[in-house]
Image 1 (cartoon, helix red, strand yellow):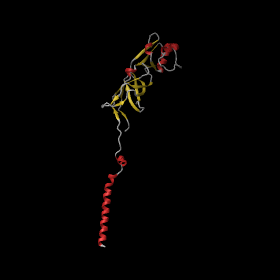
Image 2 (cartoon, rainbow, N blue to C red):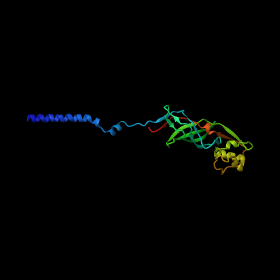
Image 3 (cartoon, one colour):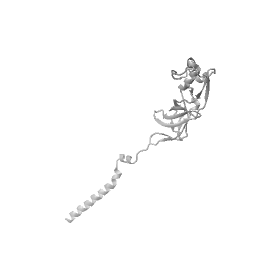
Image 4 (cartoon, rainbow, N blue to C red):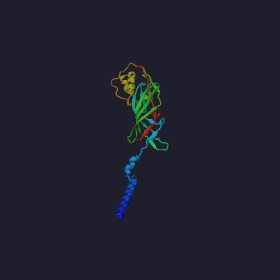
Amino acid sequence: MIHSRYTKQVGLATLVALGLMTSSLTPLLLPQPATAQLFPRRTSRARIAEGTRIEATYEDAERIILKPDETLAVALVTTRSVRSSRGTVLIPRGSTIEGQLEPQQDGTQFVADTLTLKDGTRFNIEATSDIISRTEEVTEGRRTDPIWQGALVGGAATAVISEIFGEVGIFKVLAGSGAGALGGFLFGGRDKADVRVIDPQTDLDLTLESDLFLGRA
């Protein structure tokens, strides 16, 4: 009886010991998904610093003509890739930047709001061009045909020009310029006017006004 009782006690102690060992080993045997939950994978975001220059242009016209107080929505295209310090392309050449040309105290400025990469990914962006103050005086007796050729002309600028050149003259001046519909404008009654002339090749490079983050957190 003593021997049997001793055997049972030893067996029980062995089972308890094994149980403790099993408990201590259990964390080491957790399946991989649980470990993944404890240490989630992080996806880094690329940061483009405030002040970075983005070279861009408007591709569909040789120049843009607006009234000095006119606002016009346009979409620019990047002409050079923006790269990281390691040479990685962050904004590919040919990406689209949407925004609008807005009047400022000393001129006109492009203000960007949306960046669309070539793969279709969109990001909010805060970037502006330099202020453009170049103007051209338009008068009926002055030959200014060259500035209209291949130009994108804003609706307000078209209305002003129509007042100078009249109903027939406006079609001659803006023929082939890509100007919008002319209906509803007042014709005649103005001798001259100043218009803002923007060169897409030189005037529309942008500067980031705040850090731009690409990718997901």
